[in-house]
Length: 68
View 1: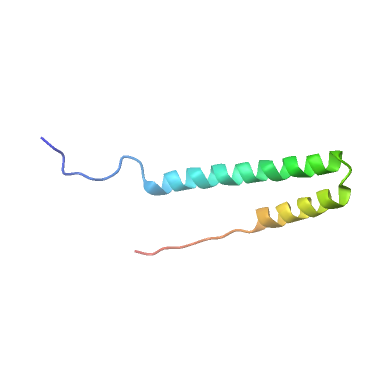
View 2 (view 1 turned 45 degrees about the vertical axis):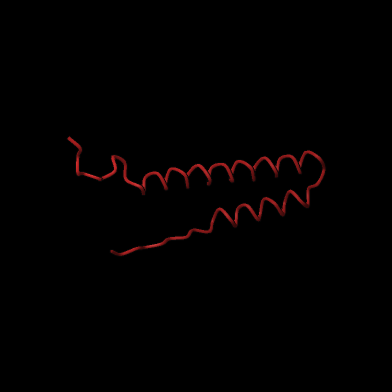
């Protein structure tokens, strides 16, 4: 007999939050790697700009509230 319950076993929001957390972690790691590479190659001004830009981007938070 086929079940009529179509409720997903895992809420969709937890999947989205997991993806968002991985994207955030990957972009932060990429920013740090970029700054280190620029600093090691002697591009201190570019490293400083990249560090400031990544810290500003990390400080920006977007909150969306959806009411049903």
